[in-house]
Length: 342
Image (cartoon, rainbow, N blue to C red):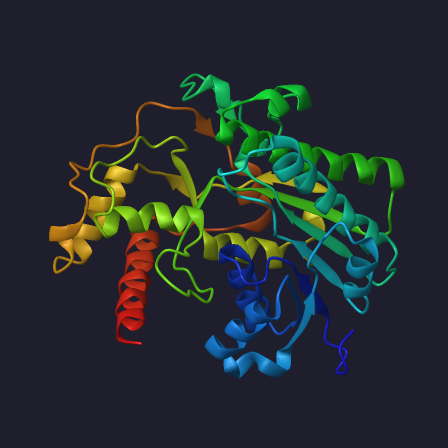
């Protein structure tokens, strides 16, 4: 607990897209935050962007999450744990060492450390629709996915694959499965909640050094809004959630008894990149000329997504796609202008 007995929420990946939004939501709800990053410069950048929150955040530095002692020390005095950080990149050369093992072991490291701290009441893990879907089935129009589904990829298939998205999706499945297996075998004193979002969009609130340092999902939109992409790419994952909705769910799950030891598929709606461009073009006509040309065609016929469990347990009203895109584009254009004038 903090000095004022305010519950403390631990958030890793604290300088990232989702992590930052989770932290800001936690602070808004009156929690004290213990934020984990790998480097001092990340904490400094956050403090510079949000000086008003300085007294409400304790920063801890964990360069390597395989360092069990460092993770355990970071969780001292913590009431709730948010494991948000996970490798999300496609430029790796060793599937196992760079993606598969870190995703699984970092998750287990957090759980083992939490188990050593009797104060921890709930652990929340940001998993992914990647842990739910069968990537090789593609759009699979006759399928309805729910949290009952699991990515069927095997470890050996992921090790041998030369398809980076397949390896990434597999890693999310392995990490989340490892978490539930740990809970079943070790039966720690805390409850677990996992969320499986698809593409996460929304206004980036993390410190941004340059427009080339955006997180992957927002960068995909920026390449269209800035005209870097000459053609609109195929929408491989036509489901989305607003990052603010995802952060709200993370915080709501901490005290929601219905969410104890539950897994949720969380999706705000369906979209296409073509539709995103048209929404942004209409909202920002002064930027329209440089955007990637688009006819606004919807995503191809694809799988359905059953999120009734999340809607029932959290009574959430999803942020509409248009608002998500407009709010995202507004922040991106303002950020570009600020960086250019700096």
